[in-house]
Length: 61
Image 1 (cartoon, rainbow, N blue to C red):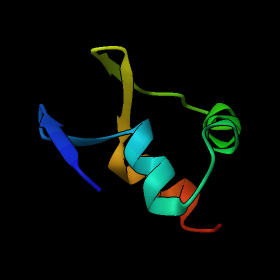
Image 2: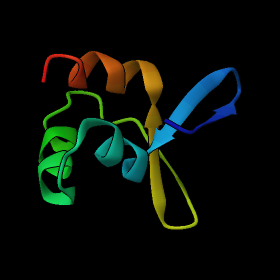
Image 3: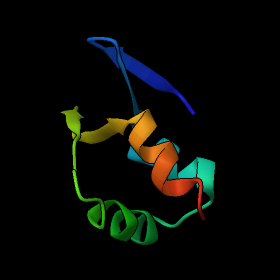
Image 4: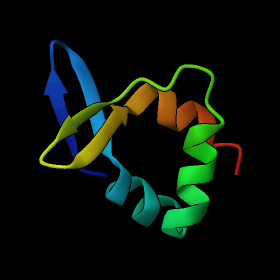
């Protein structure tokens, strides 16, 4: 996964999450919506989520 680092926190885009875990856009979005703390930043209309949060949630798939 390609990541960007902002203030010592690594972020990954929704596109990279979809590719890394082989998910459709719809399935990925449903999982992201189920997160208790939906922390993300938006850069050029693409959402980026903290890598640690994503790895914790998606590793159980």
